[in-house]
Length: 515
Image 1 (cartoon, rainbow, N blue to C red):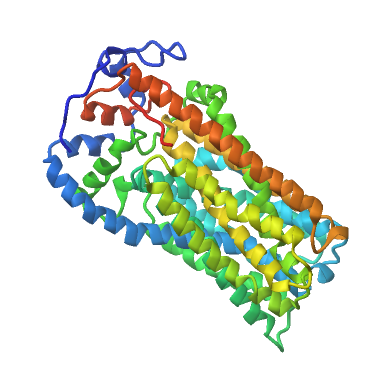
Image 2 (image 1 turned 135 degrees about the vertical axis):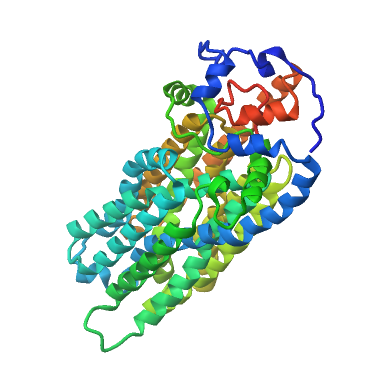
């Protein structure tokens, strides 16, 4: 990377510039660096001793190591956490409601309980992840939620099931933000959308494996406990075993990745320096949290997350109910959910790749909404005699996963300042969970199997998500143009160092929003 001189602006790049003009901060940069040291700054400073061309060549090998070792670990962790959530969906096909004496809307409330837990756990989870090692936190929590998953086999009534699903949701609230944080700290802004879609795509793999597991356990005979309880015991055991692996081997960022040499860690930090967002800073800064609340882009991201949450809660919770309502028995219902998982993997790869192209990340999110929109119209209009046509419309709802993870990525790539970003992400995951709570309650038993009221509401959510995403992109485009017109740029090294100084995107005028 050549250190070329760009147009400079004294207010944006000067070493003696005042920080925080937007919010009235007045300490000089020397004090700013002392208070806002990123964990990756030291390694980036070491990278300046090396030839940039050599670093660029070696970065290819480092990226491959991250892709082939770290990314699969994130994918596996995310997959089994999603499998946990889906256990309720699978067990419902084998007499769960009858055995636990659920009536009326009890099942919908149990389905929502996990998202109540996630909603209340989102903020503390994000705070913990900022202050403590991400890999260790994720490993310990994986062990705990695996044990909780197994305990579901001991529950025998609605209140108990609601309580245990709530606790599971609270513990699992760390999974998605940890995955986003690791992706943001390991890969460049251009690489992140595709890598994120890899781990969100494992939801589809989990759907396939879960359906096979559910189908296999549904055939188990001569066991002392009901088949639906076996699902919880097996999935929980898998979680506990995997927790040991990630607690030992999953890194917290490029700065302490065990699979990299000391030099390769330097290269890894140099690679992501152009993100201008740093890696992580453990100290919470109130002024950045305040800035997050007053940034209009924050509220757009939250509104989109809420709409996608309603859609996600509906799709994941009622997939088996939809297919079963089209006239299939429990075993066939389990098998027919497998193609939906395959569709999700394909959609995520396609839309994730589109998101890596220049100025197409936001457009990729919009594309991810279109298949599900079409599928909902099909469910509402296709004749009930065409059962497999209706099932196909249910399958393509899985494209939503790509839109969800891209929405999660925008704070990571478009917000600088760790406390600001953590605040937005905490609120984002909380409102996403709230949307997941609302979603299942749009389905009224009297409207099965079409659920026309729910379908109309979900179509509206798609329209809201698409419209607000366009507004968000317009705001980012306008701000980039405004900064370009004022000549806000400095030397490449200066801009990279500013990224490790924990400045917000309001403070760092050299920062540019990704579209």
